[in-house]
Length: 302
Image 1: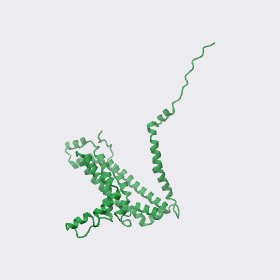
Image 2: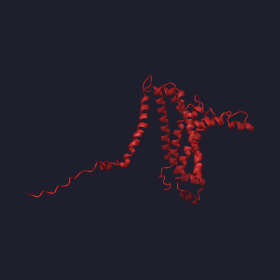
Image 3: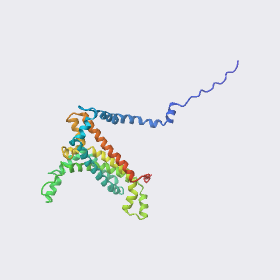
Image 4: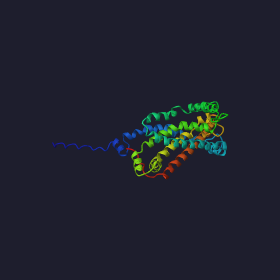
C-alpha cells in the first residue's frame, strides 16, 4: 500500500481586518464611526430637515418664504442689524485680545490672570445682561457716580439701545477670543523675535514681519469662531437693546416666526438665511487670509 502523500497546507487569503487595514480602515479609524453617527443625528439631520421645511410654506410656491423675507424690509434689515453688531464686536475683541495676549504670555502668574480674564464666560449671557442693566441703567452705579461728581446732569442712555448690546457682546465674547489668541501667540518660538531684535528690528517691525504672518491663519480662525458666536446674539438683543428697532437681529425674526406666528416653515427659512450669511462671511475671511501670508506656519514651538 502506497504511503499517503503529505497533506498540503491550505492557503488562505488575507483576513477581513487585513483587507480593511490595507484600505485605511484600521481599529483606530473605526473609532470615528460613533462620532460621525452623533454628528449626523445632531447636526446633519436637523439641518436637512429645516432646509426642506423652509421650502414648504403655508401658502404660495416653494420659494414663498424666501420671497417674503427679501421683499419685506422689516425682515431683511435684520441681516444688516446683526452684521452691524457682530462684525464690530468681533473686531474689537480681537484688537483687545492681541496686546493682552502678548503681555500675558510674559507674566509669571499667567494662569491666575487668564482665569480672571475668562471669568465672564462662566456667567452666561443673561446674567451679564442683568448685571449691565443694574450697572449702566438710568439708576445704575455708573450714572449715579457721574451725577454725584457733577460730571453729568442727567443719566446717560447706555442700555436699551445699540451700545448696551455691544457692551454685552464684548464682555461675553472677549474670553473666547482671548483664549484662542493666547494659544496662537504662545505657540510661536520666541527665538524668532530675538533673531529679529538682533538684526535691529524694533517692536513694530518684529510684530509686522514675524508675528503677524505666522498669526494671520490663527487670527482668521479666531475671527470666524468669534463672529459666529456674536452673530447668533439673542438674549442681549432682547434684554439690553431695542428688539423692535436697531437691535432687531435675525435670530429675533426667526423666534417670532416660530413662536409668535407659529410658522415653522418661515422660521426655518430665516434660520437657513442666517446660516448662509454666516457661511459667506466665514468663507470670505478664510479666503482673504491668503492675501497676507501663503507660506508654511513653521514658527511654532516643537
